[in-house]
Image (cartoon, rainbow, N blue to C red; front, side):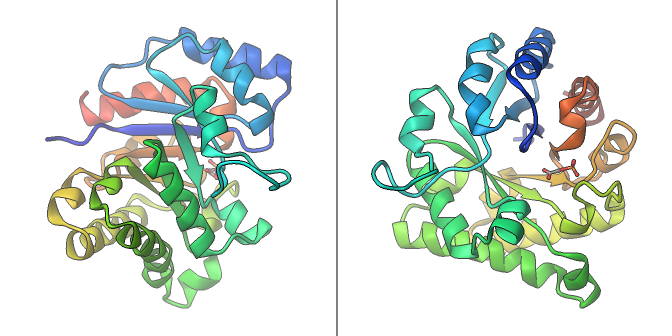
Amino acid sequence: MPRVPFIGGNFKCNGSTDFIKAHVAKLAAHSIPAGVEVCIAPSMVHLHLAATVNTNKSLHVAAQNVYIQPSGAWTGETSVEMLKDMGVTYTLVGHSERRRIIGECNTLSAEKALRALQHGMTVLFCTGETLQEREAGKTMQVNIEQLQALKNQIDKAGDKGLWKGVVIAYEPVWSIGTGVTATPEQAQEVHASLRAWVAEHVCKDLAASIRIIYGGSANIKNCGALGKCPDIDGFLVGGASLKDEFLAMVDSLAATKGV
Ligand code: PGA
C-alpha cells in the first residue's frame, strides 16, 4: 500500500481573527487533491474559528500542542477532550520550539502523544537536532532518543496499534525559520534511518506505512526536489503556510507523488 502523502501547515503564534477567517476560507475553497492528507494548525485561540470557517472535509484543523490530563487545575493547558469537542482530531506534539524554548522534555512530549493517540487523534510527532548536535555527529542519536521516548510510552501502554496514528515530522532545528533548508540528500538520509529504526524496533509493516514528513524552511521552490526522495512523504510547513504558497505546495506534493 503506497503511503498517503501528508502536508501540514503550522501557523505557530501568528494571525488575527481577520487573517484566520480570510486565510482558512481561501485554503478551504481550494480543491485538495484526493490522494493527499492536509492539515493546518492555527494557535489555540484561533482553533475554534478555523474549525468553524473550514468547510472543506479534506482540510483538517490541528492543534499545535495538547496536554496530558483530561481536565482540572492545569492553567494554560488544553486537553484532548477539549480539542475533540471542537472536532479537532489532529495535533502537533514535541515541536522543537516547545522542546528547546519552552523546555518540554522528551518524556513529556511522548506522554502528550500517547494520550492523544489513545483518544484516536493523529499525532504529528516532531523530532530534530540542533546544528551543534549535527556538527557533533549526533543527528541520529538525538532524533532516535526523541522517538524512543514515544516508543517507551506506547510499549508501556501495551498497544502497538497506536503507532498507526503517528506521523513523524523530522524538523532539523537549524533549518526551522532560517531559510536554510536541508538538502534532499541530508533529509533523505535521516528519513531513511528513522524508517529503518521503526522497522527494527517497532515492526517492518509499520516502517513501510508510517509517514515521515520534512519540516524546516520548506517552500514551493524546494518542495519538489525534497518530495522526490523516496522516504520523504510530505512536509510540515511553517512560514509558507501563512501564504497562498501553501496551496501550491499541496498541489506540488500531489504531483510529485503522482496522486
Ligand atoms: P518553517 O517552520 O517552515 O517556517 O521553517 C517549520 C516548522 O517549524 O514546523
